[in-house]
Image (cartoon, rainbow, N blue to C red):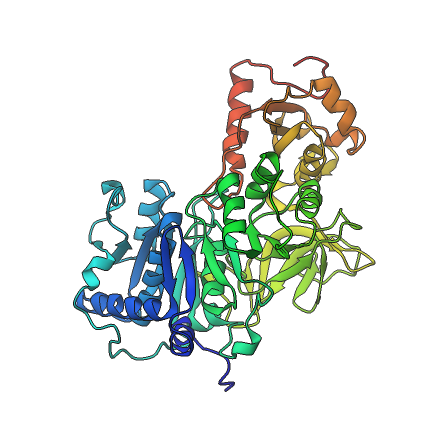
Length: 511
């Protein structure tokens, strides 16, 4: 066994607390959490969990907000040290979704921060006992607990549920700790004094930031709330060298005035995850952060820690980037047969460690040995650049054509008067389906007319790719992870059509 590699996150925390207990690990608003305090607080809370009746393998829900990131970090490690299985849940989730996760995971305990607002009664499932860190008072900071079994379950993380009921994805201790190190010389993000994010608890992106807080050289700065002005202020205040975003945050940041006078020269890495970064947005980020490498992280809740790091190249703006290695990425036909370069197909990632799985089932359509089906269509071009064509379920089959909604969205984002855009399919009596789009105009600007929009899009899209229906809105509905809820937009367009309202169309000259 390589002794420089931890087999669990509690082992990594214990190592870092022993090596430099006073070093700040997490900054979250006024909260400062150093490694020594993280170890002591999580130990006392782990002892409290055991005293409350937690048995090895029991599920413990963690309901925290972005303003509670330090408390969440303590709670997550406490559950793992106590031998439990952590079930992270954002406090932004609807009560019904939280109740589903509690019941589906079989959680017996729920940890939260207390105070106001408290846990809503609607999410207090029968038989679930609630605790806060205050219950750790009087318990030892270094309880006598057995080390974590690397192969034992450690976490259940729920999918975003953008197209259906969220599914629980299980991960072992070894899965969560994969890629971490006990060697201080090999810590990632060594180019940064601190890294910044505003990801909510309960998302795969948020989980990655928790691991970074434990493993990286840089201090984790978790924004209590994302607003462009506050986010940019934190970059200057903490000497941020690495910034992590989801596309929705990047779009909001670029549309604001916050970047106009900001000194962003110290930022060397801007990472985007959770959804496809529109090409015009990636180009705008490269201009806004002139000394930073724009990086796309391609992964999923099911696939992690499998991940493809894509370095965005402004000379190849039609691609999110070129994978450093293709060994853990494959593109196949519908029957799973690998396809040669240039051929579009289904994308799969290979897990480098014990793969994850859905709670209570092993879906063979998604998990095949170490390989995980991503649900995306894509291809690798002759120069080795990855091209994401669309989510499989989002492709619009219109007559004899298949239309990529990602391609439509890229074209819409390129319009100077459009700040945000979502494209999706809606039923059509003759063609089967056509493209619809919901657009957010640039703040303070008049949205383009249908004729102006059509003229612009014909320079980027074929006629059959043009949105047949366009609606303008002040914002797009998104889940807590920043993903667009296209089912809500589809319902909105369908309802307006059913009600006899006539939305904007790119084939008409009136709005």
